[in-house]
Length: 161
Image (tube, rainbow, N blue to C red; front, side):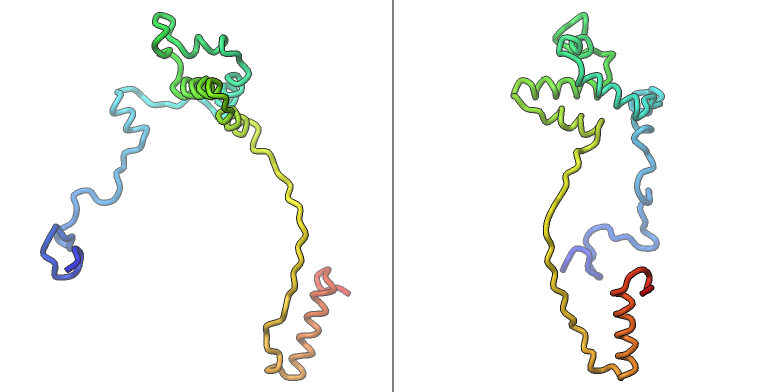
């Protein structure tokens, strides 16, 4: 007998009397979760334009210019506690890419700031359309109307000849 078949007495089946204590998904948003966990008010302050400008500054800067953002001034083995996590992550990813000769992070950032490059697609399309509709069931008058409609379609310009 399957686990949820009618008549199965195993498990805790929901009925009109036996309902879960919390119905539906939780109402706790990520911002509320962070607020409760850290005890700090969560109020994002950066706009999309500001974030894009920071990203642009990061990829235009030299490694020496980014070093103060990346490392704690008192202990160079620790990350700078005043730099936002996302900035630390981007700089670290760029440094890792440089170490291994990759460009994936920079490409992603360029796509974010400038948009993905458009690619033109060229090709020839040869289509042969066959009529699979059986017109033998139409009367003479209906065939005349059908031909008139086809002529109107072929003429284009909303049916104007």
